[in-house]
Amino acid sequence: MFLSAGVKKQSGFGDKGGSPPLSPAGNAAEASPSGEPLKCGVKNVRGVIDDFEVTLASGRDHRPSMPGSPHNISKNDRGLQQVVLNAAYFFNNESNDAFLFKPATIDRAQKQIVKGVRYIADFQISRTVCHKRDKDNNLSRCDFQPPGPLHQVFQCHIDVWMIPWEKPQKKNFNLLCKQ
Image 1 (spheres, rainbow, N blue to C red):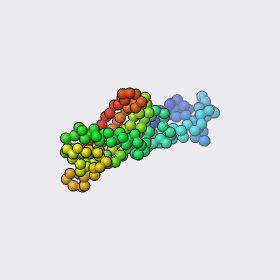
Image 2: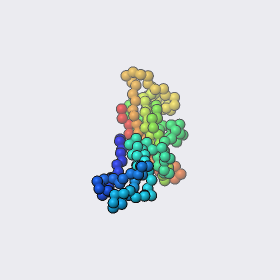
Image 3: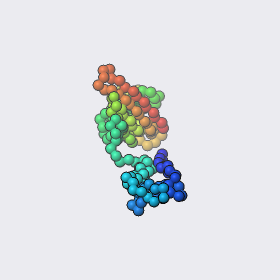
Image 4: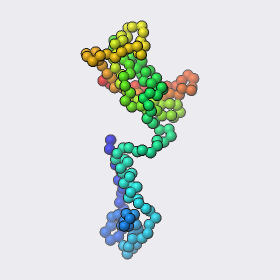
């Protein structure tokens, strides 16, 4: 997505209308009725606006995130690992596939603390060699299918909000997977 910011110019300055005249330093200056620049307390407005436009256009802002907003976390975060594993078990329970799937990679992960803990992640799950009909469905003991006709990968997005300190634990779980 491309964002840009614009600045609306005011008219009525000097004989020609348009923007206020700039001082030699590039600062905005007010014009007197005779058209002469007056001193102004605003300094380097143009530079601030240019920086603002660059930040919005690039989509990157290197300032620290605000408290309560989602922030990127390590793909090795223990809570995230548990959420992704639970998503794989949920996927296996809901699918009609003869084989189990397990998490393969985590592409993006965020965490938000807001009246609980919210995890947002994009990850891949892949088909394993373990059959659902087997009694032991421990995914850590299942190898991925080798490349070939049985190899299958799904791209998944999960958004989980939970309040772990409440008993019983409240949880809102949204999982979307597509091939």
